[in-house]
Amino acid sequence: QNIVIFTASYPYGHGEGFICDEIDAITEKFDDVVIQPATDGGCSRIRHRGGRESVREPLLGVARGTLPSVIALFKACFNISFWRQLPRVLTREPGGLPRLRHLLVSTARARMLADRIQSSVGLQEAGLWYFYWGAGSVAALPFLPKTVPLSVVRFHGSDLYGVAGYAPY
Image (tube, rainbow, N blue to C red; front, side, top):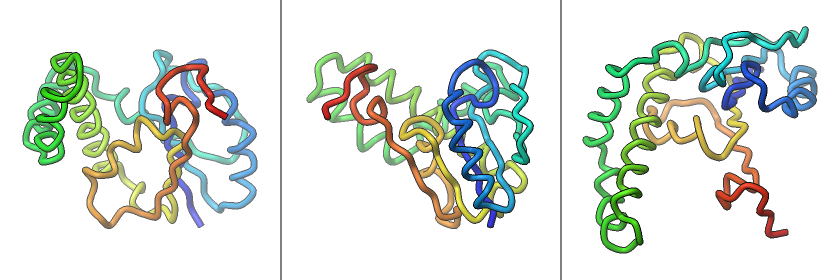
């Protein structure tokens, strides 16, 4: 069976080093392991792992420009979930305008990720998609066709509570 692991930037950049042990365990259980980072974490160099997993180009690190961002922002405005959230953001929550900006940017980023995932060769053939973070690439799932592989999401404290260092347990 094949698995695609969606990360924020691993194995690019300097973060997410703690994933190494988990990837070692996953490579023992799956025939083919593909690591799909969302960005390059500000570093185009891949950390050498020496494992048998393959690493794909970052989804958002390939085309960094204003045109893809503008197109994604435009697509975000034509999304039903954006319009459903809009009244709540503007009327019921303090700081409506900054929240509107956040909603627009988040929706646009999720659409860009979804477009890149759909156009990436081989991702749909995997038996399992594993999203290492409960925030980030997983936001693309609602914008993808219902025929995506079985997907698993790992939630961390910061994904649930949004505050670094806060753990309620």
